[in-house]
Length: 229
Image (tube, rainbow, N blue to C red; front, side, top):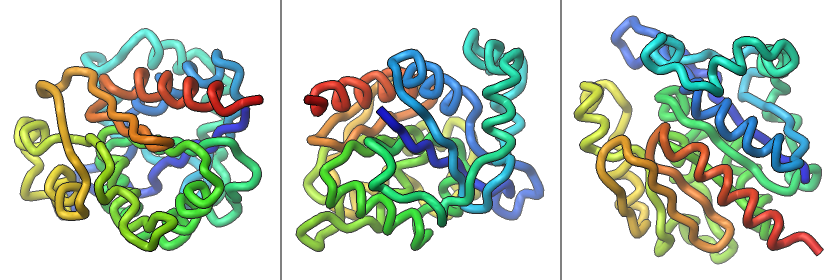
């Protein structure tokens, strides 16, 4: 199994002057789940190189046993520091694609023509697609095989309005993800704030928040195993 993980290259939190990026545990939890599940992983980002880590996600109170493991894993850190540019990714080389969240993807994924075309290639090839927390933003302008928005009529989840309110960023983000998913015709649902919650609709896997990244990766693995001869 070969899995493509796409990380954000965006590090500015709107006009606040603060930094953002990807949420560390939303990358490391799937990374280790998928790797230990036997997958070969390659990391990509729009600009290549080291993607920005949201500084808040690296604070002691947000550390998990997996983020601590990552901080002592030189090989994984080297992989992250040297992501390939997204323009060089092709769906035919991989069995699935995974987008970790953090606020960064809200800016550099929704209208990213390269990312959109890549996801659409995965859709055409009937290969699994997963995105957690804010990363379902990468799906909002993707079209399905029928030309309609991919998420129209699909059961999805993503960072909830109430969670965005809780972190005080409703007026900072370019849009509210829950609202945008609903506007695209998705059948949006959520669990309690910060509780793990995953939706699987066909080959599409979405997770609500950081706590959902590990179960989302487990669902992706399940889909891959079911599709293997």
